[in-house]
Length: 129
Image (cartoon, rainbow, N blue to C red; front, side, top):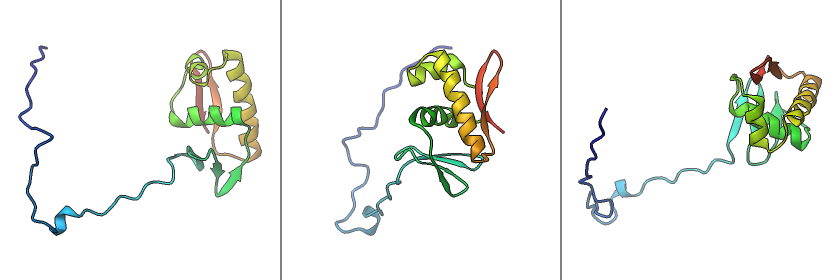
């Protein structure tokens, strides 16, 4: 398939509409800034701004390495993520990913979490029930 570049006829510096001074439609309401993006999956909530993990309205205490792995898995919740990709994202070795996954699994199981990091042989990890 060929690509034919098209020149834009729109000049972004040029005003599209001229509004009379004080026109109501020129004063749009301000958007509220979110307090921080939150990843959610099966009752787990991970606030990216604060690093707080909440399960069924209870705050969980996780070690920093466990939080890092949980964040990476929650970004791809329900999908298999290769161990090599996780190691690359977190800047650790493959063996360290294995150890973090075991620790995270124990911590989540202690809180009766509905999903745990599961190893899919030959493929990687998935956050699953």
